[in-house]
Length: 284
Ligand SMILES: Nc1nc(=O)c2c([nH]1)NC[C@@H]1CN(c3ccc(C(=O)N[C@@H](CCC(=O)O)C(=O)O)cc3)CN21
Ligand SMILES: CC(C)C(=O)C(=O)O
Ligand SMILES: [Mg+2]
Image (cartoon, rainbow, N blue to C red):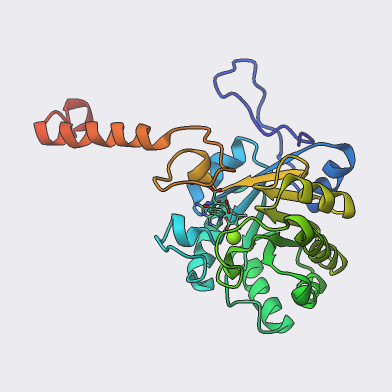
């Protein structure tokens, strides 16, 4: 998405001072669907990656509950709490100049009632500085989404494979195959009717994702959902090759940060061991 310049080469001598950056807004994402432009989303859980990804032109930053795995070392999406995610959200929001910052409502923080969903979403907007929230929901939670929307909070509805329901779904499985495609379409339509400004599709066939995108007026974001969606999202540690675990087939690795970091840290360790660091120039 290109409505405002996002990237500038700092070594370009003809570069003008950075213009005021215009924030990505929900209507820009709606426009992108209308004009056939694509937009990018990447997760971020801290200030420095948020600043980097924002400056590199990422349109939306997601403070995902995937932080449970990538930051806290959990093996499930179920354990991370609101109290753990709030400071991550605040750190990302403080760094994002252009990107639209979305935070996941974690498992257990929105299912009880529309009131609970509003209360949690308000905390992320107020204390976390988020610009919107993402809620894993099907048709049956549409009234929770509607209540959050009524509070003036932009909501992304997350359908298809929803990791917080992994036990109910029988594990990490591709959703919406064959006859199950209609359920994904119905869930997405119900969340759109509830006021969601965007629908995220996780691990559904490209065919199902295309059907959902065509059925909806609002834009879609995909992860493991093919290329028909208006936006794409990946977990940053997966996309940049920092994740040492096996990553899903939908991940493309744009860098190999593990080898960059291992090599650099290895040199640091050996220079400390052999006394060559610190040298004169790093000494007062
Ligand atoms: N680091 C990380 N990356 C993610 O993409 C991610 C998270 N964490 N946490 C929350 C959810 C869970 N996600 C995942 C994680 C793994 C698979 C996976 O292992 N998929 C396999 C099997 C799919 C199948 O055939 O049913 C694959 O090889 O793609 C899928 C989605 C996506 N999200
Ligand atoms: C994988 C994305 C969509 C997510 O929900 C997360 O990072 O938690
Ligand atoms: Mg999530």
